Image 1: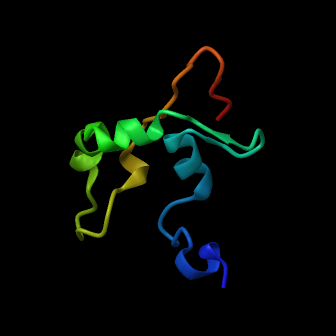
Image 2 (image 1 turned 135 degrees about the horizontal axis):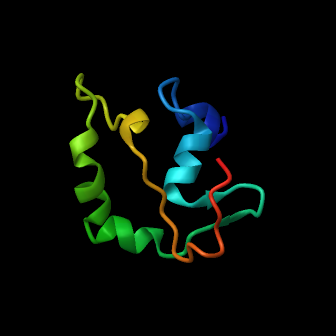
Amino acid sequence: ETDKELFGAGPVRQLKKFFSCFGVHVRQLITEQKLCDFVVSGNLHDEFVGNMRSNGMGIDYDEINFRFHELISIHKDNH
């Protein structure tokens, strides 16, 4: 089994939304380098904790309008 088959993204959120939110640039095969710093610092938690699903099963990504970008002038939002 591959990781995708084993863990998947689930039926709740679209991969496109997840990638956009966390700075994963699929076409360019790159990710934002400082994402780990954003997570480890607790800033990701602070940013998203208010968007928990009412059933307690994770983040409601439909309510998030967030994009992680280190160099916003390079990464244009084409969505």
